[in-house]
Length: 302
Ligand code: ATP
Picture (cartoon, protein in one colour):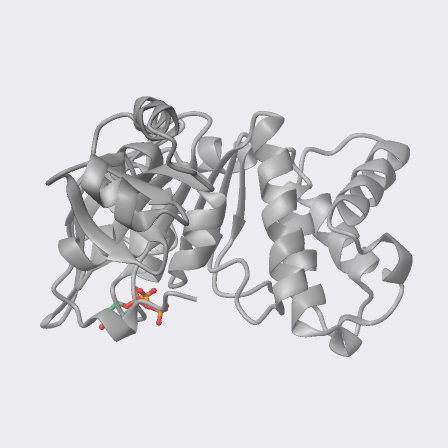
């Protein structure tokens, strides 16, 4: 869906994007994670032909960008650097204007498209208010509605939940998951690790212009070969598992063992009570910290 090779952008002496090889597959919910200034926006703008690369190649939906960007854009819904809208017009009027540059059709078709898009982002009831009276969250949703008008195969969104409260973030997350389930590939950037962990199936991590990590979340978070066991009988469990317990912390044991079910059976058979048992997995935060040289506090774990 998106492939880049050696993609580089320099501004004078600043290398904003440095040799990036993105690989976004059909059906992905791909999250591009990186602190502010790591090059995400520049990268997203290059994908849409808004900024020219200094070096490297870009393919979106199988076509080269920027050369064939006109053929690509009708199938892509995009939101970059906040939603643009005329503040004195209503959300509906803005969408209607935006739709006029879209796939066409009769008046009814266009009205239906706008209605559906407003409805999908939860703005159907308040669409007549001028956009200047919108909260940031409403503007963000209007931007998404605009991105949805073309029923895109691919959504490219730069920081789509910027400025939203937790409820708004949740709504956007649910909406993007729903669209993805219906077949839309979602590519988004964010500096919020928790957001990407909650939403995405595939992750790319930017650090000072470079893509330092790219993989499926499930692979990155593969089991570590340890099992976390909750038990009120810690002493008996430790004695039974002789040498295999790496840590004991407030009723939770970290045990070197590949199989939670087998370990559970072993404990229960020996009369040890087990209140919880689960394979240990690395958190995305740990994965990112291991992959980046940027100081940890710049990628927000919230
Ligand atoms: P943010 O989330 O703050 O937008 P980002 O990860 O999207 O951060 P970019 O905006 O792509 O990062 O910026 C990457 C680097 O390129 C920064 O050092 C920035 O100052 C620089 N940069 C971006 N655009 C320009 C420009 N038009 N002229 C000069 N330098 C630029």
